[in-house]
Image 1 (cartoon, rainbow, N blue to C red):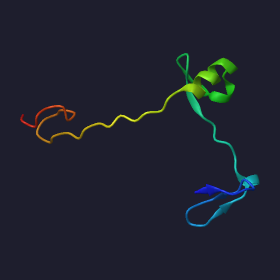
Image 2: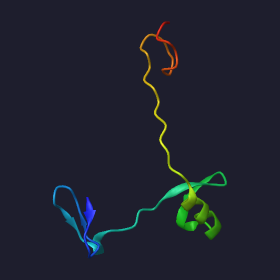
Image 3: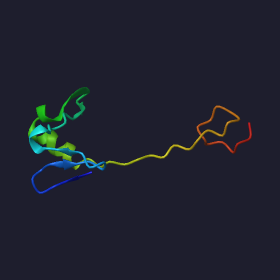
Length: 76
């Protein structure tokens, strides 16, 4: 998908969603132990949220022979 110069969203199948029909997503995250909308946070917490790094942890598949998380040698 991509966005044109007028702010319209053009999906991969050619469908156009006009800018006036789009709405901002409401993002929730934990703040001091509670899930709250990020827009409701104070400016300091919002700045911390913007500085967060996103990363992905690949979890190995189970070996199928035991109840491991892919960390054993495959010999039960």
